[in-house]
Image 1 (spheres, rainbow, N blue to C red):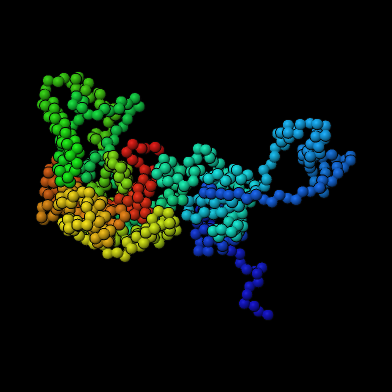
Image 2: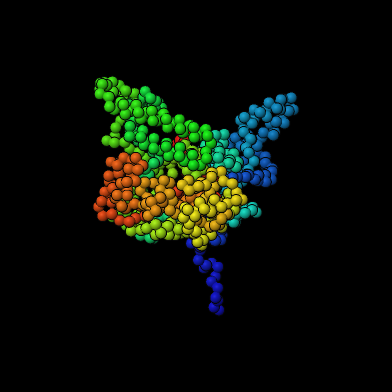
Length: 631
């Protein structure tokens, strides 16, 4: 008789779960992130590893007491009537302990002391139990439950949070009712990494994110930070995918540079410290200026003057303005002294060397001063002049002592440059980029986003999904100022007027309350943007743009670069920049110049946008900030 059904004993066994290629174990996501939660892998033998997130212990029912038969007379005294099984003398003696206690009691012995002596010789064994461990290996937001009998390893060794285990066993249905779909019954432990509970910071339950910053080397083990890191990774991958799909070439730009890439930023200077003991440099005073360049002081005067003008425009408090004016007076006095010194011919070389010696605390590695780069955009322009469309992703450095929740001295940036592109082209590219990465992370990182939406921000999934379909509002800086000046039901902390940079408060109002969608603000006053942004025909504004999004404000800043040599040279002179530093940059305008545009994305802020967190220090593996550099 034929049958449509295959006999059970001939049914094919399920395919074995795939091993991690380089560690001979199964990644937990291979089991837990399946649509069936892992049920299709029942009865399979696997090796898994991870760190204990939580645990609990259940006592096993004690076995029923057994009656010991009388000892055999004569023969082998190391055997009992147990089917010929060898029994050690110690076990025989232990079985006689109740009998010995009775004899001692009859003869008036101290049973308390006797009990202590007997237990010191034969320690009391803990009752048998089963440990239920929730472990994570970082591959999934879900934990795997592992059941370990105390006969394999004592629960006191396994249960502390943070313990690392590598276990071999069989996947089965959970032995206890709960949220788990599957568990591993451990049959063998291949590794145990114990934890010192008194010194392990994650032993305490529910540490706030601010406290976790003090132990950055451990915090990725928490579910929240691990989810953030996986979202960060997904955004990184999506960013590369977008640009590669659009034909961009990925290039690496220098971290060390001799050029002020923005023309006005404060930079970290690089010194090569010798093996000798180095003296700490003291603050510059009027009598300690041997290594201070007159040109540097003049640049400082320009920056300080701009700061005073800005303070006057924004109605800042009088104390801040007075302090800035006083600082400018001191800098002017320093410049006057340096000018007089440079004209004086009476000082001998020995005196000059003596003054310089107090400042020289480093060896000269380069022939000129070197800095950590604040931006890679200038070098990207060089590559775009040959390769067309280019992008870079890497760290950028700003001397920033503020307590900002969005920016740190070491920040990660995505930067692009597109040859033959004008402002409208690059604005469209920036919009397409944001929509692509928002859709990609929503699709490929949903479990982590769902977890973060429950723990951090309930609106983050909807915000990401709406980003992919929203049409961005494009307005000029003039329009933004006009809209903000008409607001009557709200008072801004910073008074808005033409020429003043928009604050986070202004940007938030435009995006969240007025337009209720992402906004692109373009054509800013030239004073608010770097020296190399293309001047518009009105002579007052430049071809720049900022992309403002909900939750985080300004996420992307971009511009069309100035390709006209005369305009760029004039701008460098206006700002008092050193022309010799930009000769290589000006060469790009002299030799086959091209219209080109680009933008930069503050990658760390994009992670804030995608995770719902509020402080950039919580979305960076090892944040660097003013006053703190622990590891």
